Length: 114
Image (cartoon, rainbow, N blue to C red; front, top):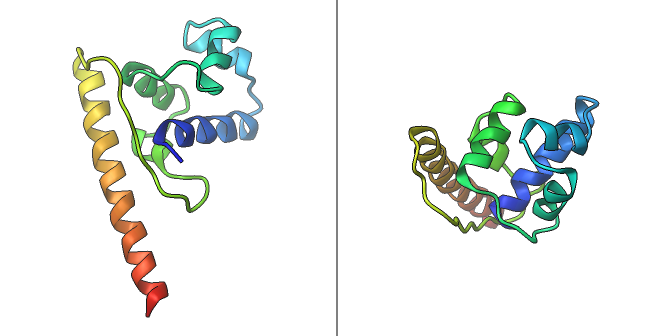
C-alpha cells in the first residue's frame, strides 16, 4: 500500500471516530467534495502541503498519518515542490516516518523468522 493510501485510510478512520464527514473535511481543506473524492480515489495525488494540512486538521503528526492501518508494506511518491517551511518539515517527517516504519517491519519479520 502506498503511503498516500495509508494517510487517506487513517483520515477516513479519524473522520469516522470523530463523527465528521468527507464534506466537512473538504471544507476544512478548502476543496469541493468532488475534488476531495478525486484525491480519495487516486485520480489526484496529495501535495505535501495537503498532507501537512490533514495532520493539522486531524490533530495528528504526519508520522501518525503515515502508519499503516494494517501490516502492509509501504512505498511513496511525491509530486510537486516543498516551497514552505511547513511543507519541507512535513516532507522530512514523512521520509523519516517511512524509514522508521520499514525498520520496524524488518524487525518484525526477523522475529517471526526465528
